[in-house]
Amino acid sequence: MPTSSLPGLPGPPAVGSSALPEGTYDGRTVFITGGSRGIGRAIALACAREGANVVIGAKTDTPHAKLPGTIHTVAEEIRNAGGQALPLVLDVRDERQVRQRMEEAANHFGGIDALVNNAGAIRLTGVENLKVSRYDLMHQVNARAVFTCSQAALPWLKESGGHILSLSPPLNLNTRWFAQYGPYTTTKYGMTMLSMGMAEEFRRYGIAVNCLWPKTLIATAAIEYEVGGPQLMAQGRKPEIMADAAISILSRTAEELTGQALIDEEVLRQDGIEDFEHYRYAQGDKPLLPDLFLD
Image 1 (cartoon, rainbow, N blue to C red):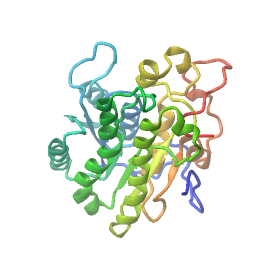
Image 2 (image 1 turned 90 degrees about the vertical axis):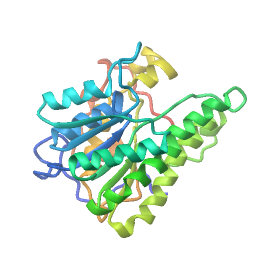
Image 3 (image 1 turned 60 degrees about the horizontal axis):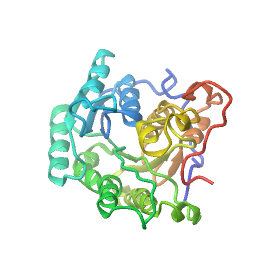
Image 4 (image 1 turned 135 degrees about the vertical axis):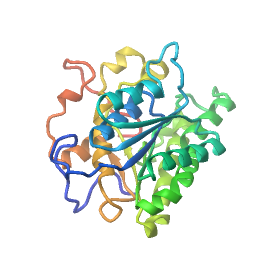
C-alpha cells in the first residue's frame, strides 16, 4: 500500500507559518478524540492557531493523579489564545455517546469539517501474557473507535467534503512487529486498514481519509508510563511535530490527498522544512529512536 509519498502534490510551506493559504482553517470545525493531552492536545492547539473551531473529545473531565491536562484545560488554552473550543466528555467505546457528541459539536459550530482519530490505548505484550480485557480495550479504543467515530461524523463530513485523519502506521508486515506485541499491532493496523477502506468508500463524497504516524518516538504520557519512562522520552520528539504534519494534511482536499499512510517528517520535508532540531524533546546528541512499525 502507499506509505508516505505525496506524488505530484504541491506542498504548502512550513505549517504554522503565514505560508499556509490564508483562511484555510477559518471557521472550520475539527473534532479531535483523545484531545486532553499529548499529541491530541498539540493538534488541537495547532488547529486553533490556524483559526479552526476545535472540539476536544476525551474521557478526562477532572485532573488525573499522574497525567496532566483535561478537556477543560485544553479548551482554556485555546480560548486564551483567541480560539473557539468545545470540550466534550467522550468515551470512544460508547457508540451512543459518540453519536451524541458529534451531534452536539455540529449543532454548536454549524457542522464538522474534520475528524482526527487520535484516542489510543497501548500495552506492548504478547498473547501469552496479555489479559483479554486489555486486548478488548485496545481494540475498542484503537480500531473500533475509528469505525464508530468516522461513521458518526459522516453526515456532516459529507456536507463539508471534509477530512478524516487517523493516527496509525503504514502496514509493515515484517514479522518482528507481530512477534512481541501482536495484539497491539493488530489494533493499530486495523485503524489503517479501515482508513484505507474509507478512503475508497467515501471518495464519491469528496471526503479525504488519511493516516499519520511519527518517524521517531514521540514524548507522551503513553511513553512515560506504558513503554519506557523518561529515559526513552529523552530520545524522542515533541508532539508538536505530529501537530504540524496534521495541519498540513488536513489542509488538503480529497482530490489532492487521500488513501495515504504518511510519516510526519516526510510530510514536513515536502513542505520545505529541513531543520527538525527544535522538535527534540530533550536537547543533546542522543540518537532519536524510530517509532514502532518502521524498519
